[in-house]
Picture 1 (cartoon, rainbow, N blue to C red):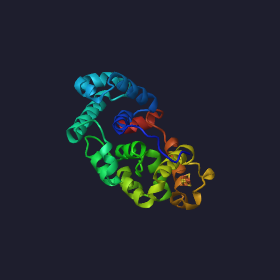
Picture 2: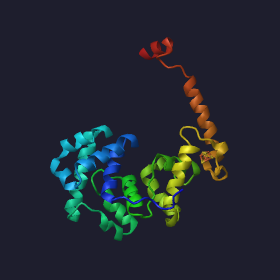
Picture 3: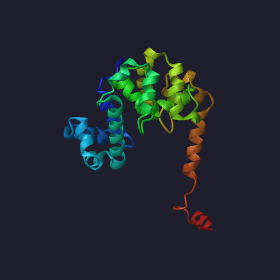
Picture 4: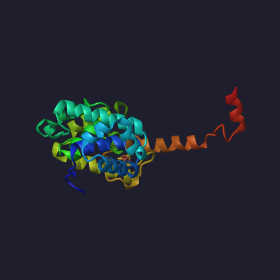
Amino acid sequence: MANEPPRTDPVDELVACILSQHTSDSNSIPAFERLKATFPDWQLAVDAGEERIADVVRNAGLANQKSRSILRCLRQIHDLVGTYSLEHLRSMPMVDARNWLTALPGVGPKTASIVLCFSLGMEAIPVDTHVFRVSWRLGMVEQKAGEGKAHDTLLELVPPDLAFRFHMALIQHGRAVCKAPIPNCEACVVRAMCRWFAEDGPDRRKTELKAKRAKPSAKSNPAARKKRAG
Ligand code: SF4
């Protein structure tokens, strides 16, 4: 596992993150590459406008919405910084830099943390679906508090110099072992310290899912359909 995040330009990373929302890498990465090839300078994209950007990133899905977000972010960065750059964030404390980014239109803590971690090498912890699921199952954060709040809680718990490794380890563990909806606890190396396992969470979840699958749906059961119809 890499100890250091790869470095990318922070504005590029921000735009790539917006494109990656609600779609797979196989859709968003080519869309980002097309965008960069079409507009080698962000000013060209801003001048081209929302509809033209949407045409270029169409394959990333939600093209109109993403094009609008990209344009609004680029304009605000230019208004505040005077150029399309986020280099000034390097000299800020990490939390201040994150607050600066989350003040941009449509930028949440996950996107901001990705930019800080992967582009600027700062000790942020992006909380995606895997990081969140493993964290609450282990008992590091409360599930009901949500992903947004988990960003702050994990920063309090994880030593700053381990932030990137922690992020990568939880993603790997969430993909390979602590999967949704059923984790493979038998193969888990941190089972002894897992709160959810100690509370029989995985077994309860299996029972719930079994019961759900066994329940006849209205489609397969005419009697249930009739009852619902009233
Ligand atoms: S014991 Fe099970 S639920 Fe807990 S972290 Fe490991 S795989 Fe996930």
